[in-house]
Length: 325
Image (cartoon, rainbow, N blue to C red; front, side, top):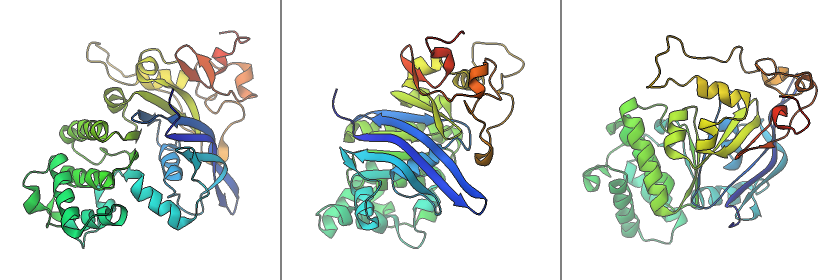
């Protein structure tokens, strides 16, 4: 095994407030290998985007990393000074966000934004940077890139803007891309194109990807492994096919059951009763216990760590050797 490109160890993120400190991420640990695509999935509020924001050093105040470590290529990065983190973020870690309009400056042409990013991080002249920008736009599927490079973001459709954002993320040849819901704001017909494009480009550029989404279809199509999050903690992590076809955590099982199957004739989709707990009301023990169909007495008291569960690992007492199923 090669050493991980990214290693997150016991990450804890807090939000201080007037009414006390809210624990948003609690003891989250995972790693990403070079060239790997790791999917991060869960309901809204599970902590997916916060995990990505913590990794790229863009937590919104007053949020802060209150414990644990984030290591990139063996070097700790969660405690870097702002300027050093900014250089690392542009050069070695790229980011793609949900809404391309928030990533692009409406006052600058697409070409200016690309060439500035390229020249900030790579030792290229203005003409070389422009050439690379045109190549990136062509690579991401924008036709007549040499003409369109001097257009403004509002002159592009939503899908085309997201292609520009992918080009921006790849501009400095990063080793890791953090993609936070990169297709949510797009038409369904465009979503698949963008995901296939991202997968192909990252493979060609040798970049690893952390793909944050709530769409299990996107995970199944794109990822090597998947991490399932619930209430700021990891519920399950493992190879994508194992998690999809043989989920080991009751929450993952519920997520899979809620996906409509083309070969089944069902009047109603399965659903997980209840709702994700608020940060100031996470129950003791396993956070999923109020909604779990297989809850045991122990689940109300003790919080499970990730336990071996066949090919995956699941934070569930069902997989403790001493627990009765």
